[in-house]
Amino acid sequence: MNQNSWVSDSDFIGIIDKRNYNVMWEKVTRTAIRGIIESDGKIALIHSSKYGDYKFPGGGMEAGESMEETLIREVSEETGLKVVPESIRYWGKVKEIKKDKEQNRIFEQISYYFHCDILPEKGKRNLNEYEEKYEYVLMWKTLEEAIENNTIANNTEYTPWVFRDTLVMDKLKEEKDLKIIAPS
Image (cartoon, rainbow, N blue to C red; front, top):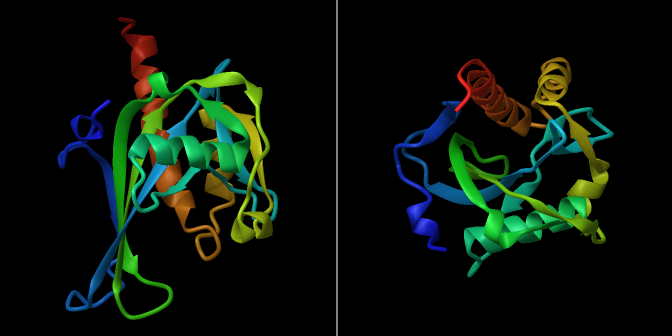
């Protein structure tokens, strides 16, 4: 599958620009890949037991990895779920622009979201240090439950992704609601 055919510059679900940086600073860009996994009306989400938020499983693309490889690796590491490679379908992307936490530079992250199916068997999770610190667990929630929870638990100091992933959840819910109104 040619990953370049999945994406274009015009399909942003949203652009989140904090405008808390100097436009003259150096810019670094990170590419992240995130999975939208649905089963029985619920979505597979990563829940931080420490901060209470929900986010889509996924993370940063490593050097030499394709988008597919990143999605498969990240979903497996965070959830133990095994993605069916042939099921991967591009959905959209979100761009975030803000001041880098570490130094005076612009941090731009583009998160690509993909629908995918999973195999019935589960593997072992492999959380990194920060994921363990945030006490990440896999939970299956409806979009409505996750949106409501993230609206209440919106602690962007520790979980800056809440706004981004809640925006995506809202768009998915809107898409789902339109299908119910006008079935194909």
